[in-house]
Length: 79
Image (cartoon, rainbow, N blue to C red; front, side, top):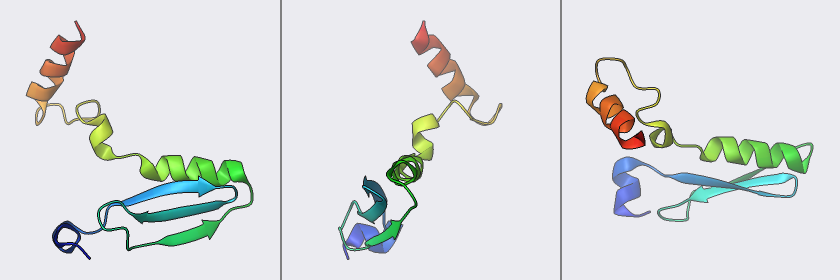
């Protein structure tokens, strides 16, 4: 295990291999696992959903007052 995994915890990434969804830590590659689903579409759908990070939506679902500067910056950037 790397120092970053010791401090921050593992950062799993998910991928689908047919009906099997596999995951492993992006930082150290150690924490691994697999789960079999009924169909390949289910495995792909779950892998995509689990790979979604909250940081991808930062500023879109932000609290009204707490992240107001970020909302304003995003609005100005879109123009």
